Length: 211
Image 1 (cartoon, rainbow, N blue to C red):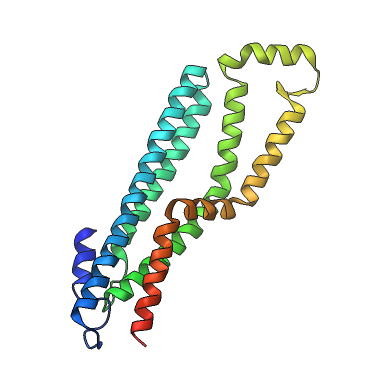
Image 2 (image 1 turned 30 degrees about the vertical axis):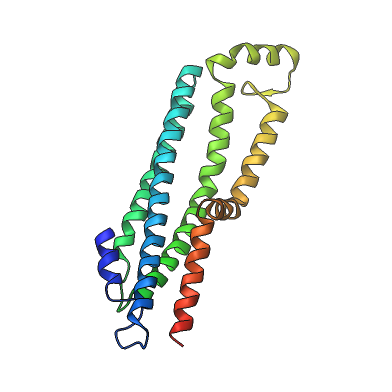
């Protein structure tokens, strides 16, 4: 990935016949390389965060006696991490074009497409996490005494679950599914916001120089 970026920017972000001082061109090249490398680094950290976080949750689930829920959650989050890794690898397939400006613009479009795809995927991931966590905790060995107390104090049960609590959880999962894209977009802004702002600013400056 680094070689492809460096080889692209050696040509300059503008076409070879553009009227711009070489030193200015070189400054933008360095800024652009740093920008994408930083995004790529943070993306990798995010992938490892998913892997480590889901592994810790799995260990906690096993210790709490919720092996099934923990296993399903781990498999789902490892799939999310795998798709993220494949998404990162797809950067190598971007059209480098005739200039680094074209590549940087393609990179911005890649981010937009990636955000859209993950927003759609999280329509299922977010509610699934909520439901797995709820069912896992409720049916876990560590929660067994609490289940017995609930069963003794009320008849509002369905499959051993407290009816009204379960309804609240189901509604919450539905809301998370409905607003998954908005939630994911806010997550992206929180994690990559500064880089995305710099990317937009760099593209605006490059476009201004080409006018």
